Length: 147
Image (cartoon, rainbow, N blue to C red; front, side, top):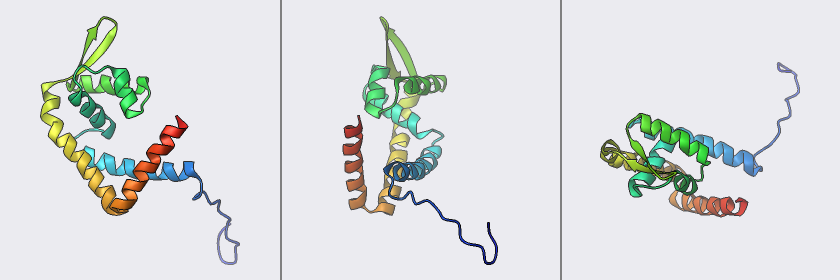
């Protein structure tokens, strides 16, 4: 109920909830990442998959999933999209797929790294370098503990 003389509604305070706080932070960081990677016409997740493939030609999708902490099925969808865009190709080695970046992906590496750097600079500038480094370290510790 609102209006003059109405009692203010009580609001639940979720600010001390790790799940709520990290989810809110993740949404904000995702917004910034989508802006920076959007400048090069790419989703942030696709950019990171490409960086892993560029550094490790012939890598298996399961290893990409492990390195980026995504489910294998999610990586498969990302690779389907990147293959459709002509940025990776799959080569079968027996029953195992190997992922290779195409020449088009290699030409984009500098701009992908530039988007990643711009993303980092934006949140590091807002948070301050010390907080950014401490948060990154502590979140990594928490992720490993929950795994």
